[in-house]
Length: 246
Image (cartoon, rainbow, N blue to C red; front, side):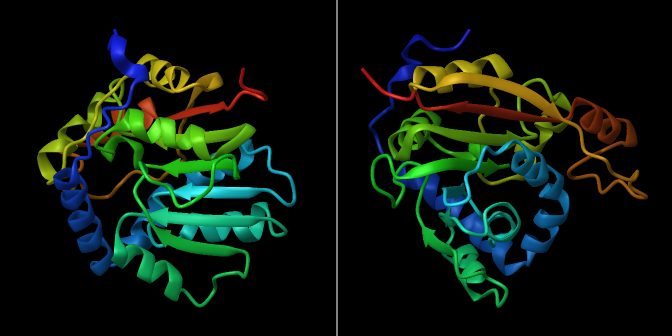
């Protein structure tokens, strides 16, 4: 059962939590993990891109864009006549995103948290987010902020592997220096509905991948654990802002 107060953001900033998250992401940027993220998350991105009801001149906000690989895909392959804004809280990730020589003219990158997005009210047609929502210190505030910046009828797509039903990755929390929310599918649906979204729904994304030759012992301790993780799949939550608010 989700908390009764889920509709209300905490209104209490948690700079320590954001600082820990920034430090982790900055370290990942310096370790060149962006290439690895693109490889492991690409199929999630393609699944979202296939669902996007994007018009040719729409604006997409790519939330927690990392080094910008998916933002570039959206700008070139999904909506070459539209606009894409990639935001991330890691200065090093944004620096890497901006320095990419293949950046198209219709994409830009900015440093921002999910609780304070650098766009006006009702200015975004679609929001995408891959493997990041469970990191946000105040997920409800993030949901309300997403609602604020979306235009009426604007849509969001949030994809993640780390959620309650996929128990095969819960141990990831033991290997990361930040807190991670572990909500179930119904909880996420209720969270976004409570933030004002309609047509909220979920689906599972099962990735096609070759069996790993070796198990690293960190992300997966046994081959059975990896197999279970793949069979459970990723969670994709989507919804939209109502056409007109009363």
